[in-house]
Length: 316
Image (cartoon, rainbow, N blue to C red; front, side, top):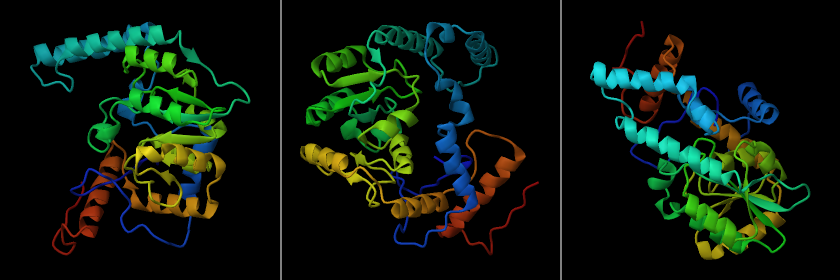
């Protein structure tokens, strides 16, 4: 969540804050600045390598000059230089994006905008096949079925706002989404270009498996119902579900307790920031490489993997 910060985990797919507990809150100036950036700019951290994925998948964007340059480079690397490609099945990758653009075109008939004064609960879709679901919470893999259960559990005067992940617009089953929207009259599929910041701000509560949106909601002081494993679960800030049979009760509690304790929130943000290290993914500058080296070394020493007395290296 924090710009130019990274978290390391050891022998565990479930990332969580170690030794979390009561701690004197000392929100640093750097942390204050990062929170202020989020609240003023209404944007979350997107790694540089992934920024082109966080765009609307229209046909105009799909057939852009930039994408043709990227495709030409991949074809040259694979068939001329004989290199392995990140997405080595290039033809399948192209066809997948054409399908996504087609789905996006069809779904434009179903997109809507928030209605002023309407009471709603917000569920942000996760990226399909993302490790957050496939490895950490496979029980929630079928998100279309999940939102149908959520819609059925809402109070009669609430709508359920759902929105595609900005990196996976058009990446969900068209048939399943159309079925859910047709079956559950209290569901609105929000236009993917709308910023989640404002949707969170006006929601009665947010429901998530383990999305970054849940973390954003905590920053905004919004109640969050957590279904899966995530680092902000069990910190006294969220309504954590142990059994889907308790969903109605959890939603009711979240809607009736619509504020987050500011002191608890600040303590959580402080410990979350302290849990992270300096380093930015996919950036190869010498300063960032040095930060990553120092951070990994510090983490390994702290974890007891190496002895600081005998492990010494210099960065040129």
